Image 1 (cartoon, rainbow, N blue to C red):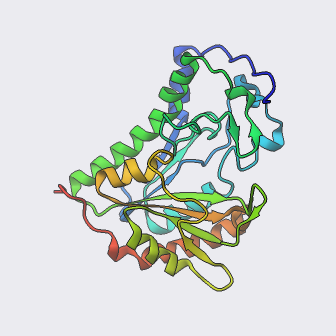
Image 2: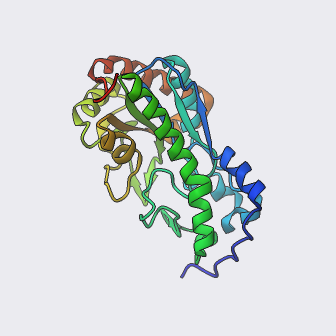
Image 3: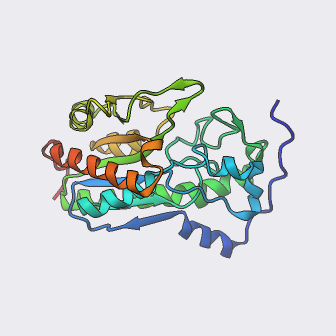
Length: 271
């Protein structure tokens, strides 16, 4: 029993919609020289005021269900150190998840982990369409345009999603400090894990999640469909929840990515 759904707010005016589309994505350093293109799909916890927090208390709006804690700080530091392009989301994953196909049940979650999201229940098609065109499409279009330009120039490119995961999930304590999620790019993922793994901070391939075409977007669509190396880096969020930890782990990831750079090859069809 999820409780009574909230009444969806009126759709914004065309001008307000245009403003939100601009807020939906930030592209930093698009001409960066690194072979790595960094994506932070869960960088923001922002939910516009009209949604009344989707019916959630403030504690839930700032928790991992709303964004990837520490991922934005880490991604910004990584992009600067690597001279890499970085694409970041401007709204909470609870409005629509940028790393989920639109047909996925978790695209606009009614329950996230064990928390009911009342503001996502019984949405009208108009509200769903608004979230797709205003929050989802601008991010994916920005990533696609960036990758298209690099392909046209024949620039070696690997797509790296920057994420964090909870230390405990539904009662299970996760022993890893980091993980690399990969599918077709298994050799790259294994090399990256080998570069990250330490006795005091274990790393693993395809932990704490695995890539699934039905449930993932970044790796299958922006990576594999383009023939690019593509992985998600996952860091346990308690290690990067503050600036000091985020910068420390950004350094670990930068060193690991540099160690694996020779495995990134020019895209097919480049100049």
